[in-house]
Length: 181
Image (cartoon, rainbow, N blue to C red; front, top):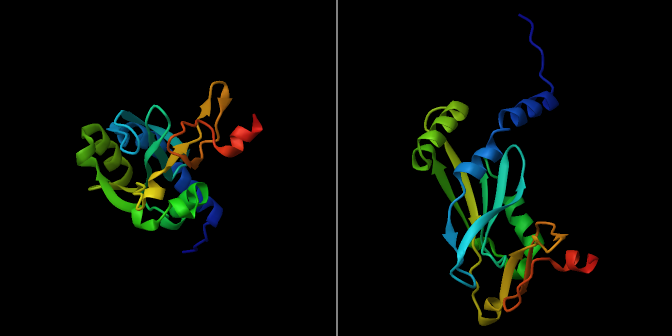
């Protein structure tokens, strides 16, 4: 019997094709209601920050754009990528890996439809890993800094990057996008 080697690019293509369902699944079944616990107590909603076939990143924002939590869903998360992404956007002074937590979301806790989808894609007893970052300010100076997502203001679109700013100022644009307008 003759064997042949499958090119790595083909293998990667197959893996990406197999995961095309994942971003939509995350948006539909891993999106929860919460409330802002950084500057107010109003409801939060998830804003997609980035997504591809194998990972989904969202930020929970209050109506003023303040970030309560950043979540990263994946079947095999790259912790370094997630931590570097946040640290690069908000700055090392606002980020510590001690504030990153890891959990699992199982099909049975997400409801019958979600469980059925996960089992059809991943087999019995499937789970999705959830990595989440919640900033816990440790000093009074830290408490004066807020994290927001650049979602835009009026007709000006934002770049969907996290940024740090004075907590007493409501900002829809990061400094980079604000300087463009």
